[in-house]
Image 1 (tube, rainbow, N blue to C red):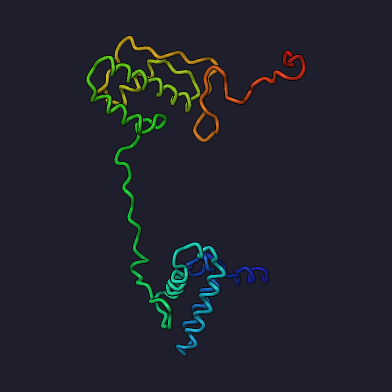
Image 2: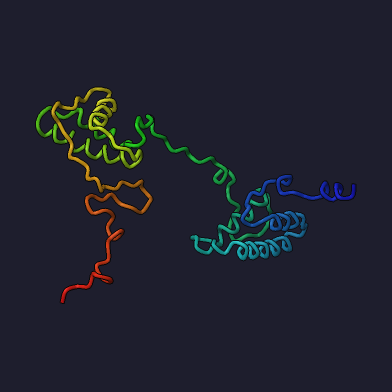
Length: 226
C-alpha cells in the first residue's frame, strides 16, 4: 500500500548513527562530512572556520566556558572523528583524553539498617557504644531516643511507644548498647505536627505551625480595646 511505503521510507533518528555531539544536531555532522570531502586544504580550512562559527551560533552557552573558542574547535575535531586535516588555530585534541571512562565514585560499603533514621543515627549509636556507663551516657541515650522518636513519627505518622525506640537503639547497635532501665521520654504535645523533609513545614509543638491557622482577632467581635 502507498501509505505503508511512505512509512517504510521515513528516516527515524533511532535508526541513524548516534551523534557524538548531539547538542549541535545532525546537520552539523553532515557539514563536517562534506568538509572532510573537500580536496583543497586551504578551501577545507576556510570551510572549517565557517562550520565552527555555525556551531557557536547553535551552542551559545559555550561562551560561558573558559577558552570557549578552543572548545569549539575541539568539538569540531571530535565530530570529525579526530580525522581532519586543516589549518586550525588549535591542535587536534588527543582522542584518549576525551574518551576515557569516568572514575566511579566509591559507594558506601554498608547499607543503612533503618532508612527512616538515617546513617548518622547509626554513627551516633556506634559512638555511644564506646562511651563509659554513667549519668552522662544515660542522658545522651535519652536525647538520642527523643530525636529518633521524632524521626520515626515523621515517616510513619503513627504513635510509637518508648519501648519501640529503645528496642531500635539496641538493634541498631547490634545489642552492644543497653538502654538503662527506668529511662523515660518527655511526652509529645497533642498539637505536635511532624512533616517529611521537603514539604516546607517544620516540626512545631504546642502552637501548631507558625503563621498558619492563627485566628484573626480583628473583625467581628475582635476589635482591639481602645
